[in-house]
Image (cartoon, rainbow, N blue to C red):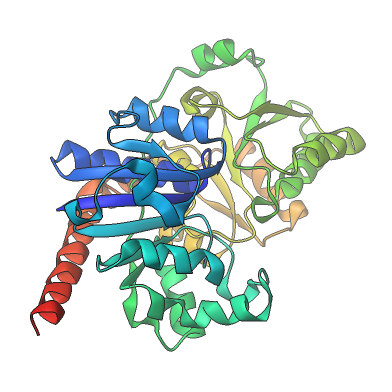
Length: 371
């Protein structure tokens, strides 16, 4: 099977990491994979991530400026490929984004993986026509892949065309564990602090403000608490202002290419998302047996609801978040069962599901052509 992955999103995000992990795993199994990335932010990070797992720039990895002209930009023939598979950072792209992608696909099966966390019911971008597109978008693709059953439920509730929607979870690059003392020394973090970690983009949907407020409140009871934030985004400056305003013991580390040491340096991982489609960073933390405190949203409950070691709070409730942080630090839970997530979210079932979907759609196209 020869597949062109067309990525459309920010080069440093979880959607980029998910695509690269999938492409790398497929390539290691001798699939013919090409990546064309329209990374509208941080393309150099996307390029570095893909090259780190064996893709070669301008051979099977391309950075493009116009998704509608992908074939002209990569200078490869559409006839060589069996499938065009789009990975998009939105829940549903705007109609004006979909149309050129459809033209680029031609007679190839066109698959859309929707990484966007925004709930379908909350889509407001693009005016009335684009709002309607969330109901019609399954018609424009041969299949829509979403990374969790929680997202699939949204589609079933919101559109009568949800039969094309397939839940296939992301492949996750699990992290190396380091000695905590070594990790803290490498990151110049205090050896005796009790560290709460936030590792996500600093954007509205991730709600970093709740983490800052929770850390400030928890520090009143536990002055040894240190919050650290790994990540960057549109709210970076506002986060700095809130840290100063609250006098919060929070240190921002910015974007980190390798987050394994910062996970190993921490005592509790805090995920404050208002909504998610998957949540790679929380899964990495949980699988590394780090105690976790998370917002109580559908996708997280589906994945982790069976673990007594998790602490939960309603999205935006910084007081409950603070209470859970303090509880974990005072009485660390047994997190050994969380290690089973590495098997649950292993690559084999994901690869099999994608290959089965591609073959199904190629066969369907061939049947239609013969008729």
